Image (cartoon, rainbow, N blue to C red; front, side, top):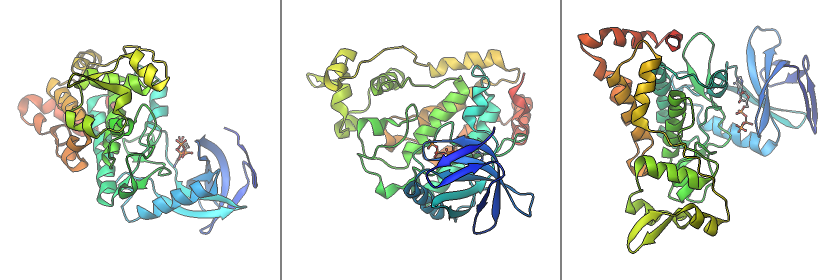
Length: 365
Ligand SMILES: Nc1ncnc2c1ncn2[C@@H]1O[C@H](COP(=O)(O)OP(=O)(O)OP(=O)(O)O)[C@@H](O)[C@H]1O
């Protein structure tokens, strides 16, 4: 797509050059934009190499993203499925961050055909890669805080290799407090909505929502209002434990007590407390029933594999963050290790699962 970027200090068009510290970058095309910046594809003069340069709207946000990238720079970006940064420079007072060029986001890849369900063998590969990313971030005490379908990108069109991008909202876990306003709906964890202490397990919740999306072809929780989200969570997983409700600073908006028993507020009660109107759409998924849709959709199907996936998903979407599965535990889960696919009767399916580690062809019937 053609490019014409107008920032206060910088007018940019295709063919213009950006002077970096490690080379001069020639602008080729516009790749995308977000709330913090515009991303352009560039080639480095004198080489064939292509890069994605994020041109920040605001230098403070640019510095914060750069500082965070420096914090994670010792983590191997390829092993850990994190975007690779090459350099950061200021050009005409605008902060530019040079990243590796990636292909499409999970969001754009699913937008093409929203009815698409993804085969479990592909979901496994994506899940394993992103769990490695979460494990690496947790090991250095960093929470991404903005895991969405947009912020996960495939590295190239021919293989299943994803990377986590956009560390603009990432924080050191120790700096997260109950009041920190993080994550976007519909990826926001219940502890953020309910006002509970926060840590990096917010990312595990968001990853659970991402995997649920690619499995169902839709968001698992409605999110027009936070009430709808909490209501769906209660319908799927039951009322949060008393211990969770006890600590939740924002519980009064969502829950009330009849005698000594907690219950979900009615939509009318929620509107009365918050002033927000609620529209109940009743779009609540039944995790266990999804197995039938997948069974009809793909030739290669294994019920045990589905049960393993749903079990992992329920552990990732555990409402109480203290009981939520950790990245290390999730990487040891049967769905990832494929322990449940051992044995002769599973050999054909297990073979397809192995194949999908390198090819993306299993998505088609
Ligand atoms: N490395 C990359 N390679 C190719 N395209 C990219 C790359 N990084 C980002 N993009 C594209 O640019 C878009 C915006 O990037 P990014 O999410 O980093 O910006 P942002 O301003 O922080 O966005 P947000 O509003 O989601 O916080 C992405 O959705 C993607 O389409």
